[in-house]
Length: 130
Image (cartoon, rainbow, N blue to C red; front, side, top):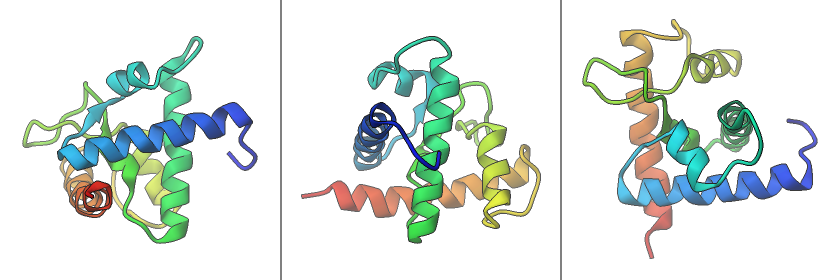
């Protein structure tokens, strides 16, 4: 989003707070649980959430920070270790940003997510500590 509405800005702030709390706890969160926690208004809440998560990815990438959005994962998609991984759009956006060069699902995508997740937990979990 190049020009978010005031509501979108509030939702992005709430989204960041929730993801930072997850990082402090060392946990990932599913899109569905994240949408419930915010709560995301209106129909198509998961779709709207993914758009906001893409904005968070773009902001963090532009600022040279680990990707906080790596903590948001799909309930349906799992890596080889059984842990959730983000949906295909996450990897497609990373490819678009030049941050990842591989398929948008499968073992290579899961391995890349594991790296992004480790960096995010380390950075954002530490940032949330007193």
